[in-house]
Length: 200
Image (cartoon, rainbow, N blue to C red; front, side, top):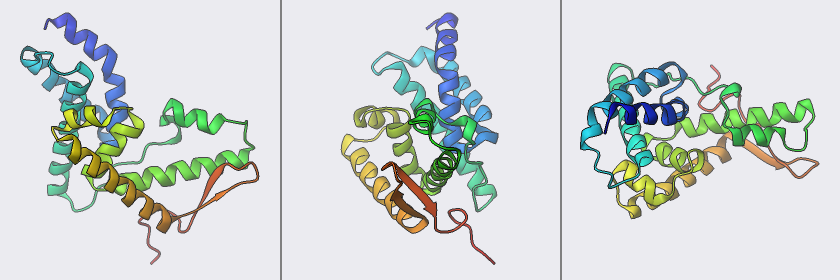
């Protein structure tokens, strides 16, 4: 592929990859990891044979860069310190959910708290569960595409997805009180201030 092709890939995918990586490695590291991924993409363009879609190839490189980053970080410290994305980093779909039915300010706050709570719970999942959930639910990839991105069998992806959803449900049951408000909209009250937060 030519330099022009790399420029086109960079233009089309860079912002998407940064958004994806924010959810994997946190705001503070997303740009750096994205740069590492695009350096690898640039160096690997000659080896890309077009056997997969460019998007799955790019997400595979970005995911591997994020997992490498986690391995390096975990060898330096025992707990992850990446920030959970802020309200202004919500996806278009999440923002649309918040705008639906022009909720009252207190309803918007409840929904924002619920989204922050759920994002925090997703972030606390093990990497192999968190990655499949994010690729499916936030990036819109099919199970077959996720298998290609992660270099796994389709059955393995299905099993991980099932286990990830089960673990997320367990975490939500432990951390959240879910209920329907007066407009039958799913809402959440936290059982404690933040997932993983312990009062001393």
